[in-house]
Length: 193
Image (cartoon, rainbow, N blue to C red):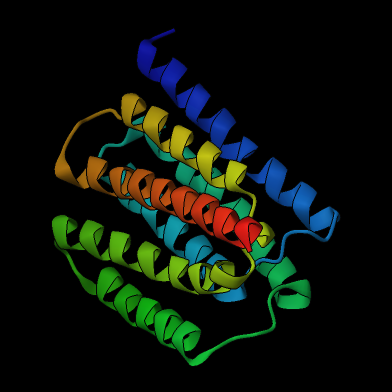
């Protein structure tokens, strides 16, 4: 078994494990997903799988497929039992993400596509950041840590190393890392009050 295959397996394991603390939080009614974030991510990660696979990502593309399907199940849950306080900022981020997705689908330039993908992913975080500013305990930090680790190993599993195959996983590492820090800082502030 090659090192890339081992990295792909580890990435898939962490990519699946990210959902364990999230689903536990949903069952315990401690986690409250935002529909716009999870719908954006499920659509985007599905598109990310196609882009990575077509770009030569090989086994390193599989975490996109698994994560896209699992994100979609959370989006369905969020539709029924998720965050109901949807603000103008949430709508702006979601509609912007959808508009950028249209450009993403229409562009034939892989570099532009991967940059648009990272932008859409970031916009997906906006509603969750806004919600988590006031309610940082409604998002399990462990989920985002597992996601970060998954994408680190997916980089090691890539079949080819190009801007197109590496940029999106690198952006996911950065956004997950930033969100973890944000959650921990907000929890510290709230605990100090």
